[in-house]
Image (cartoon, rainbow, N blue to C red; front, side, top):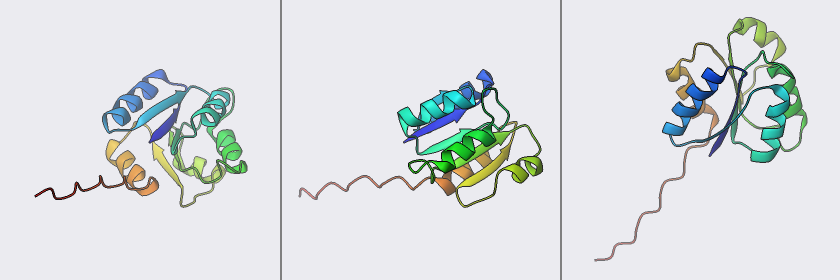
Length: 131
């Protein structure tokens, strides 16, 4: 399952890539709003983790573009931001597929949001009884 991490801070991108990869996710990344849209079109991720303030298109702009596209309208999005969550909430309408988290990264909150937004992995098939 692919997750797209979008943040202009390379440290945050590396931290999230390492953490998510260690938990079995395939991670793609982008460092600004324009690159986020290109990466989304190329990789079709199951979820996007999105910084709010970035160059070349804010997280709010990326959110609007994703929600406006037919193929991306339902993609779950986790905003991870250093801005006030109240300020972001004014710009980004809450919904069942949107979560707002504060920086620095709280991995317990991130795990909870991932569990809420991503489908449960399929159980591996049970091998037939060969007795």
